[in-house]
Image (cartoon, rainbow, N blue to C red):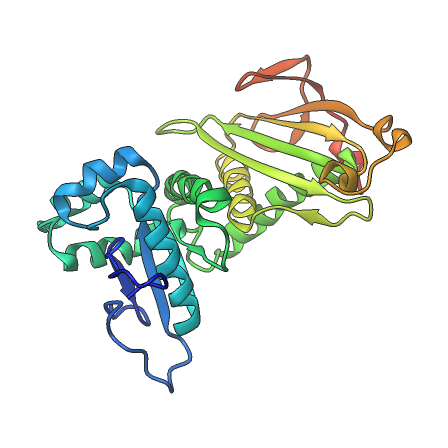
Length: 308
């Protein structure tokens, strides 16, 4: 039963337990196990909810009810499991997975296998009690997109991205992370978005990260976005691919920009800024002229070599 007394509806397919073994959500956790995990796939739109109706993933009458039931299930899972992880349940991805492996989409076992499929683990997010309907559902959508990009980057690196970062890949990954760090240090405090595009075989690699940087240099960025930015930078540098990056946003006190105390003097310190850098494959430098990336216009950036 749910908290308001009505019978619980099954909101979605769920796999729980230590990998690689899959447990159903009805199976009680052993008290002496310290590595139990609860994994769930969540439909993220009304259209996906309707499309998945034929697979009997949920008996909720509509998408809003489905999200409420899922939020309740996640709250219960946090009380009963050491780790709760969530990923977007994408109907087309699921159909293709079942076709590839000869599975019946209506069978619960097919959904469990889809959720814990190793190549898709990069799409999983840890759930720590966030509002499901607020920021978390959009993060699930981004995590799927990010996961597909990470797989593409990994292919460009011959599988080296997740094999404990072989030495060459690890060093290049650190070079990419240093490029990102210098972009942020040079920008100073503020609220920014970094947009990155690398022209790669098989299609353009893109990555986006929202960044909040405080006056003391502390940076706030979602872990999954940071991983993606560094991986795409790494792939571009390792394969010596042409790339473009734009950092834009509001420059000034990140505290006030994030909703902290404000006054007239502080407001005057804020201004919009947009910088651009390009790479021919080996190094990053300010663009030779103003550019536009995904609709964002930017001026040539500052020299990253002068940033420490």
